[in-house]
Length: 259
Image (cartoon, rainbow, N blue to C red; front, side, top):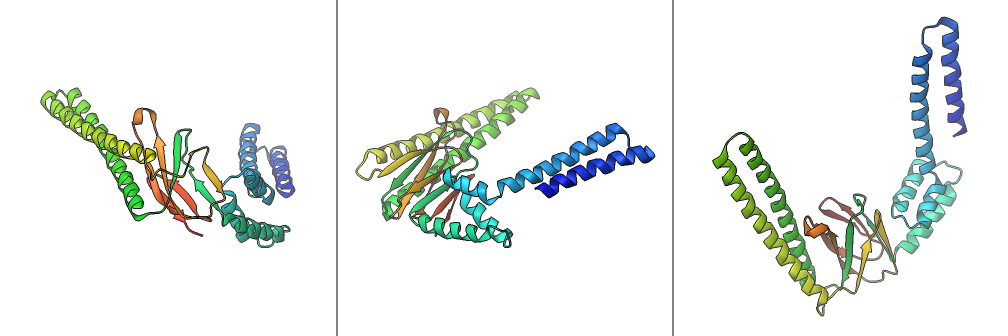
């Protein structure tokens, strides 16, 4: 880092010397160039600081799931770092503890509400939850289609195509009704499931960009639900996991990394 700061100072000195010697570069141009150079170097310094072993250890202490991938990358990309021995020792220590932990990465989290449920393993339960998630996906597809048709109806109306606009609006209504019907049915089934004998043995709310569960000693089925205002747009994810697993939520997919 000190080396980069020295480079920044030398570049500034050389640029100003250039002005004094031949007046080729104006002071305004030089200031702009300096700001650009400083911004790039500051970005490099910030990136280096974020990728330092100290920053990774801080992420671990704050229970941030990304600390594992950061530490793995640090060991791979800095094999000759002065603290590489400590990094490898930490990786072995964390990996041992991680065998009874579950990490959930949700980088697209934007302050909404995300409920996490854990169900005991059974083939019937796994199939039921997959069917519910699939139907939710169908409802979301219908909702997207409804918005497309409604937009086309508004365009037809602006173009004076009243009959076409009316037909499209009727189609949009049928699509919306079907979407709401599917969503209402799946929500009812899931609510009954939550109150039945096979209800989840654990539930919580995801916060920030993920979750860190300790003491995971059994395999179970997870079910994550995005709860939007008035149920306008709800996504769901499900799968089977155990201690040491990592779940990465991205769009409609739940990518499971097994230990």
